[in-house]
Image (cartoon, rainbow, N blue to C red; front, side, top):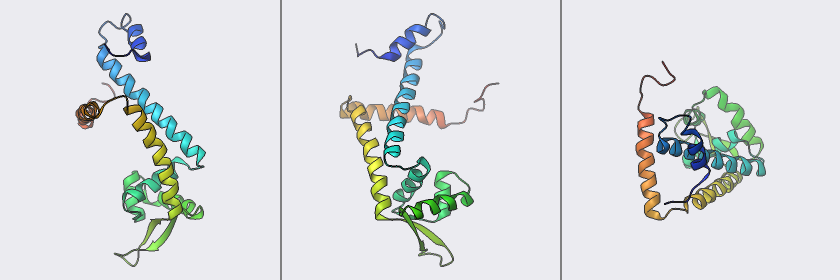
Length: 170
């Protein structure tokens, strides 16, 4: 038997009310929500400590994932935003010294956005704190268990990504 947690109490409370409740489904979904909420709170705290807004972090994250440089349209695509709304974000990050505008290497009419050392450093600080917490929490599992969890969540996520046609009710 594994350790009991607060979700076990939640499931036990609802089973008499909802006799058809599958305790494994309810337990898994609630645990995923609680873990996501926990990691979100850690991220929010570190961003507040660093005086970094979520949208600034997101933009820096996109740039870091693209080798430190991208066109504003590429940033917008990655963030699923309208390209025109990226200008204000970039302006704010330029003022803070986290990014700079540079001429494009592929189109001289275009200006790209590049991470500065300060931008990469603050992005890395936030990333490291969140990553450390992810490793701490998942450290409850050994390497094989983490692999199994990742594989199982991949299957569940793949099912969630497939359209069903009836999401949102009848």
